[in-house]
Image (cartoon, rainbow, N blue to C red; front, side):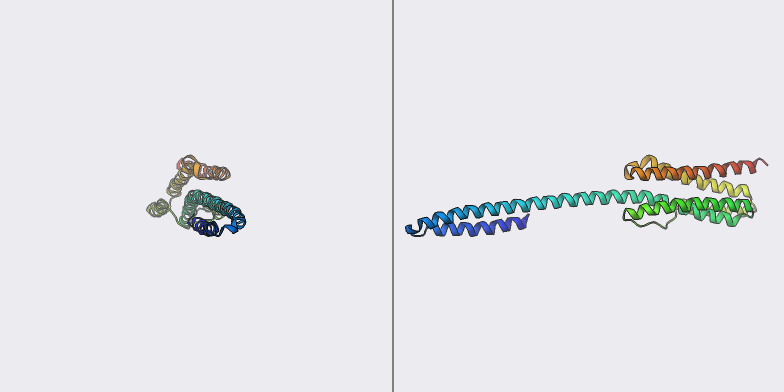
Amino acid sequence: MKTGRVAFGALAGVVIGAIAGVLFAPEKGSKVRKKIIHKGDHYVDIVKSKYNNLLDSLSDNIKRTKNETTILEENEKAIAVLNSLITINNDRIKGYETASKETEEPDLKALFRQFISTSQKCKQELVKEVITLGGEETEETKTIGKFFRVWMDAKAALTGKNSKAILNACEYGEDKALDTYDKALKNELKQIKTEQQVMINAQKLMLKADHDHLKKLRDTIANK
């Protein structure tokens, strides 16, 4: 806007100076004066037009910048939500890798590999969305996930790697994973697009199925 004012002022000054010079010229130059005055008016109109065009252009640039900033902020919020889900799946993968090492039961090892596969699939979908939004995936794990793994290690050691103890620890981690997904779907809906909501809900159903399978197995072992 400052540039537009300078340009307008400079051109207007030239035009006004030329007109003033002609107005004070000898009378015999009256025809010339009229012609130049007419041209002066024309030049003023040109300057005004260019100035207005410049203002319109600056206004459009400001609006575009604001829109880009808004989109960027919205993307950052969505990325934060998606990365929170990536984090809980990182926890889940690490947790079941630990659980698989703690148990000597082939069936449990196979089950934990299945659960790891579920989270790897979820993570892959989430990472794709984060990259699409211009973000970077997180490699972090939550403190609660670390606590889950440490607690499971201690519990397994105290009980001689008892299957029920390991499954109890795993269910604790499953509850935390579902809580994170519930939060994303209930409290963060404004931050994520409809298609992302659909994806997250589908992932939650997969995790819920794993959770229920785990709980059923734990209850079966407890009743033996």
